[in-house]
Length: 128
Image 1 (tube, helix red, strand yellow):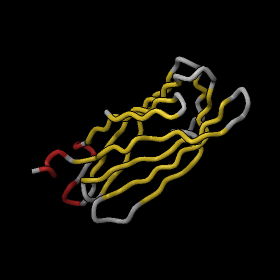
Image 2 (cartoon, rainbow, N blue to C red):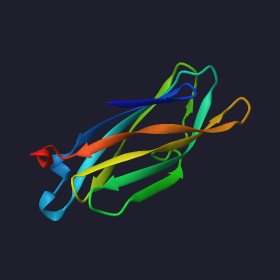
Image 3 (tube, rainbow, N blue to C red):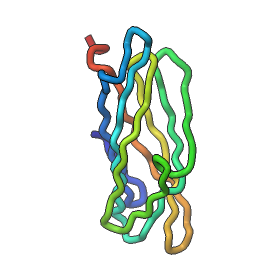
């Protein structure tokens, strides 16, 4: 698990290779990742947008941006967390992701960026 904290918001990511959904002979490697967004600040926040950078060794850099996380814009009270699972496919079986969330402090509407830590996606057999 990797973790990063920005303005009291802790983002942790765990990644897992999905062999049952992958097809290495067709350059298709599937990974899932579980993100936990913990609000350790003293203000209620809402996650408005996300922006991901995806690196796939030997292939073009990709970016994904959009509203919320998996179709939601969660409101997270102080001391609470929001968790979700999503996925990414790679062609090489070795890559990484990192990014930012645009978060709003509900009380005063202040927007700020929260860092999503870089995490590695490596099909286990690619290390041999």
